[in-house]
Amino acid sequence: MTAVAPRQREDGRGGGRIRQHQEGAILQAAEQVFARAGFQGATMAEIALRAGLPKSNLHYYFGTKAEVYRAVLGHILRLWLAETDCITPDADPREALEHYIAAKMRLTAERPDASRVFANELLHGAPEIGDYLRGELRTLVADKAQVIEGWIAAGRMAPVDPVHLFISLWALTQTYADFETQVCAVLGRPELAPEDYQRATAHVQALVLRGCGL
Amino acid sequence: MTAVAPRQREDGRGGGRIRQHQEGAILQAAEQVFARAGFQGATMAEIALRAGLPKSNLHYYFGTKAEVYRAVLGHILRLWLAETDCITPDADPREALEHYIAAKMRLTAERPDASRVFANELLHGAPEIGDYLRGELRTLVADKAQVIEGWIAAGRMAPVDPVHLFISLWALTQTYADFETQVCAVLGRPELAPEDYQRATAHVQALVLRGCGL
DNA sequence: GAAAAACCTGACCATATGGTCAATTTTTTA
DNA sequence: TAAAAAATTGACCATATGGTCAGGTTTTTC
Image 1 (cartoon, each protein chain N blue to C red):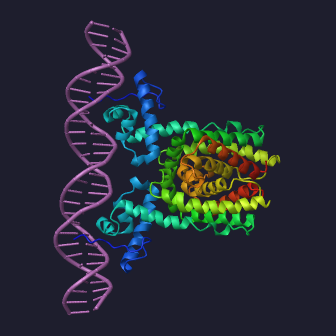
Image 2: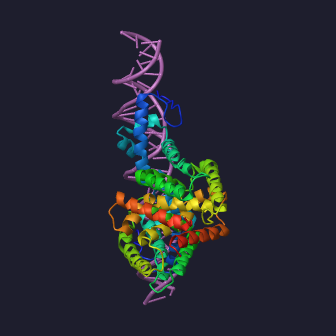
Image 3: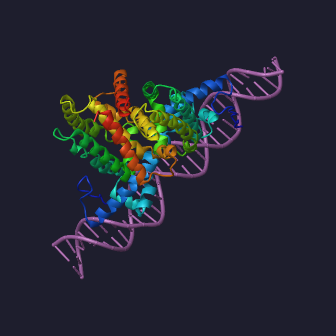
């Protein structure tokens, strides 16, 4: 009989010892495969191969490909949140933005595949995470935008549309993961090395801080 | 017998009157479908449907899906080039950058699907256009970077890494097409209206010009 | 106006792939 | 240690989809 796998918590932290381990391996493999091929291009066979288990076993843990995909996205969304912690009314605008950019760039450098899966999902209209974007994310951004409005009103930085500023920050940092191929091409590098990410971070910080009159 | 379709010029300008028309319709339909679903997700059946002809007729003009895809990309690359015309040693840095940003943003607003197909190709490692990126594009960027270096050396703008500046400009503008869903979500819009693009253009121009000390 | 070229199309095929299932083994529980 | 639960797996199936093909129709050419 086909056992119904009782995954308990949506974050995959439930289940026994073996389940923990296998789901972890699957999610890691899936992130790579989805990043490289997108949802449609990814195959369950390849995910299973990379995770080191037969396809039918993969189906024991995740009934459908969409389920694996959702789990990967859930994982990634958790990374995307927070980060904005440093943006508070009392913080120094310069330090806060500098810190935020550095954090986002670090994430980009360390988890480029996560960024790519996210980018791919957005690129195709965010069928899975649209609700999250219009809910949690929008609220978060609205909050932080208020903080920045406050900074501007207090004359602590140049007047900049705060929401568009966030959009710009995301674009400026994630481009180094999402469009790495293009970046490598114009930089004349075979791949991005740590120094490249350092240069990129410094560049974005300089551009944005000066752009915000800081 | 299966006729071998003798497409003459690679840009689809060859062939008879009917061929012209049909290929145009196909390419337009294909751009939409590839933008929404990516290469793997796009189906020949849907492209044919949107172009208003049976699938086998589509195959008469383009032997394989990859061929259609390459034609669409070729179309798009032609848009990507030029644009940088305004960046010359004698130009005013402020005006030149302002103009370049406006042009790129206009392209983004008018041909979002083209931008998305391009983004998708990059996201998956640019298997088709990698050579172009490392060839023509890199040369072009190197040239324009020299111009900007000249501006900086002459004290006409703040010192900014020119190649990273280009990367930033692309990211800042294309994000409004590629990640439109996210942009709409945080802006609280159902879709981007012309005013939104105007605001976005003004924002990016202000941020970058100030960021470049202009 | 007839021959040639270009164009059109329904029926068909091969293959890839997501997903199922029943039987077996391993692990946990009591 | 025995029963129950969880985990594993190879064989199998249904379907979607890229692509073929033979024969028919329209358009162009001379």
